[in-house]
Length: 113
Ligand SMILES: [Zn+2]
Image (cartoon, rainbow, N blue to C red; front, side, top):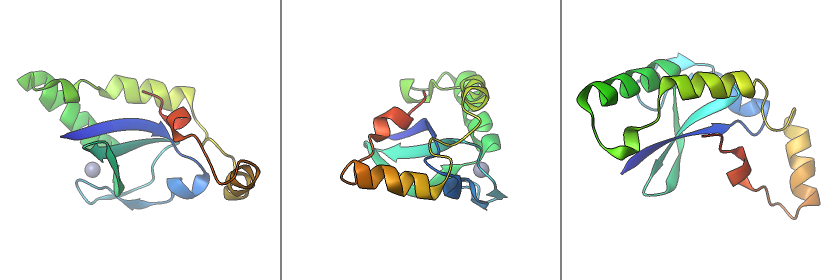
């Protein structure tokens, strides 16, 4: 089952302009990424744009579909307000952190919703 996860960008590099993983329109993600997991596995290239999230949430609400669609656009907007910056201010800071922690970053900390 496809699942949407809101999580903080690790570094500014993840906030570069890129095509949406669903609609294909180029966009620049904010510091909270709309990521996709299928059966618990992240799909690396599938970061969604805000209009796609908004559309899916509205559609799921209108059709009252399954529990995996119980996120909503308001939660995303609140997360963006709370986390305007990526987890690490620079890619160098991320690499330095990984070096100090044997290459390990606890990505569960990045999940915001
Ligand atoms: Zn999109």
